Image 1: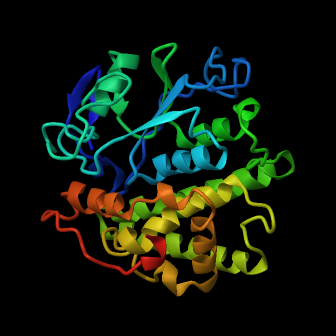
Image 2: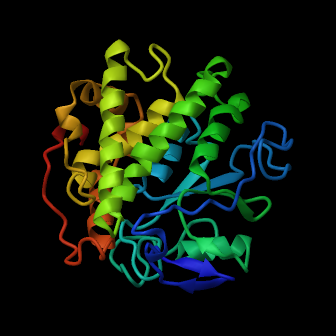
Image 3: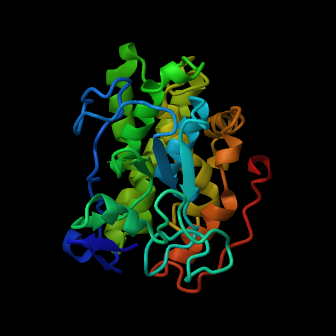
Length: 323
């Protein structure tokens, strides 16, 4: 996991020395917004109108943040409107690369299908030749303007939820007005303790920082287990974006976070309500096709050499229901 510094690539891991061993995620930089008519959205500038074929999505099957956008592309019937490129599961010295790059020569196409780039950081540089920051997925690219619309997954899924209604038959609103304040509040807590919490535990370099993160993680999972006793979804009978934001962490939990990130107080399999909930979300039409456990396991175990120097990918656990 490297970064760009004024347009120059540097293979630099996260700095935890200055944070007392704690992992701190950087803020995303591209925050424009697609709207039905191109009017300015909640963040960024205007001029990004919803149009079939105009936008392209760069993702990793392994990344939970990118996974959110793939799921909403399915749920909102955007497959024919927004095309996708998938990076290789292995993230090495050049960060995310496209399958078949010289670093991984046996895996298929040698470049992305829009710009012909071999490395994701080159896509960032196409948008901003002097970009400084982490090169992350997802990336939503505007073919017409030749730039990045957004690399903030939480905002991309809201664009997918609301901007393209004129071109699909799906009318379900995953961010309904009456629940927005409650959704935002719950999202913030789940993000801090669970979505980002597994990373805070896994990337910690001090015992105190690890224990702080892992205890907060399981306290929140215990709370969510109790909450789900009252209904099928986090907000009762109404499925919202909060369910899908949680799902992408839960689907990786037993396969990766329990062992690789030392989040091993309990498994999701040990929580009856969370297990039922996870399976129900996974069985939503179209969602199983967005889950690639081979990519997920290979990415984490092969790429994080500071955690798993041998790069050995475990055979288990048995998640036969999620294949």
